[in-house]
Image (cartoon, rainbow, N blue to C red; front, side, top):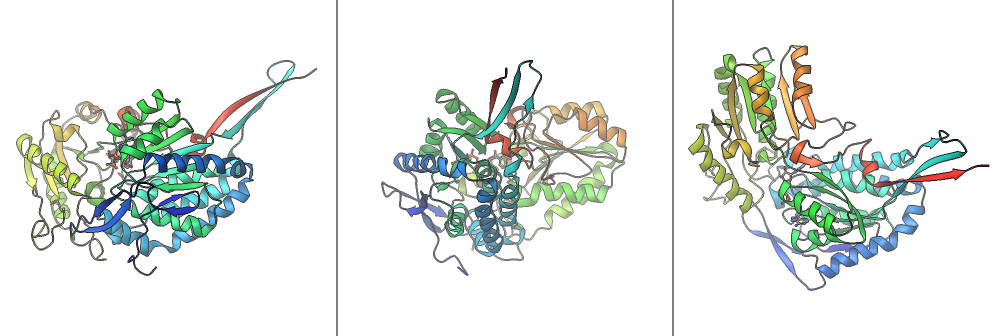
Length: 487
Ligand code: NAD
């Protein structure tokens, strides 16, 4: 497919593309033009049950394969993903406004399948002779059917991070894509078909939280569920799991990353990094540094440099390769950010931007859901825009005088996904690494910098559990103790 004239929007259940059983579809609008670009099949309760049943039926044969045999399918899928950047980047640009110039997700997804194609042999238990008269051991075994529920902001990154370790461990999967960005996942389903996976090993359904997401969360045959999305939905999923079969749940949730910038840092790179962090994907990133704390003595210079960089974006059609700043994903996201812009103007000092319009890109000739890169200064710590996730190109820059003061401010959040500190003082860097309440602390760098082989996840309400190479396989394995009495 050189272009995406024929967009796949059906459900992929038991190795076949099918319409929703009740014929229901939902319209998907381009956030750039507001035009309907596809009618997407909405999985009904019957479809969701059928996907789980297909996964259940596929499990015995799939789990009986060796890691090498499972890996062979995964490597084929990885290769197809690498080759599909053009199609996938176009689908993401069309559905949620991600500029094609910033697209790498197909390679990230491919990398996950390629890594886990080799990692299945790492599923190993331990043995113990420590109980006299016994040889004891543990087995690591797949759960059976697992579910993956993913968000819209970087869909294929999460597709790979969840589905690859799940199937490498011998599980079978039902993945539900986000209603805001279902097209790339449906396209990956066409690649799964091409790679020749046995039917039912990976099922891909589209739909809203109600119906299909909620059904997966409370399904008695789903034994583990990996979720990335908002704290609100994470809580609903955790509750549904508790009320049904206590399925094992991994939750990767929201964030409100603080970046602490000391006067002794490399100022230019601190500005460039923190600007990129809040601008990438139009600020729609869980770990975007939406709170920046700058030491008072350099605050003026920092703010001037930051504003100059943040204002200098290339906004426009995300399909245009010269664009690096697209619209917000949909009208709901756009409305939400606008509410925070209004609240921010009441609580803090507007230093840049502040409108839902970039050079005539919203409301005018192009009806895109654009938001101007926005900076607020000196916002009170208890203001809504300091406490809540905005998910837009909107940053608060506050100042501090002492370490104690900024530690208290940085940690005064229910979120704890990621935090950053910029300083050349190694002792101070290590003090901050220890004291900041976040699942990842970055020193002299900030999000989206990550390390593939380090655990990723949230402190406090930012999540439960960890993902990452070396972590995720275990999220999809049960541990069984085997006691053998010897004479
Ligand atoms: P969301 O919670 O609205 O939706 C995520 C997914 O959950 C979607 O597929 C949605 O259909 C589904 N869902 C909604 N209601 C459900 C229900 N009751 N039961 C089951 N599933 C349901 O989140 P979003 O708006 O798609 O994504 C943005 C959020 O994701 C932000 O809060 C962001 O911080 C977070 N996020 C976190 C990470 C991370 O790794 N921690 C990464 C990316 C995004």
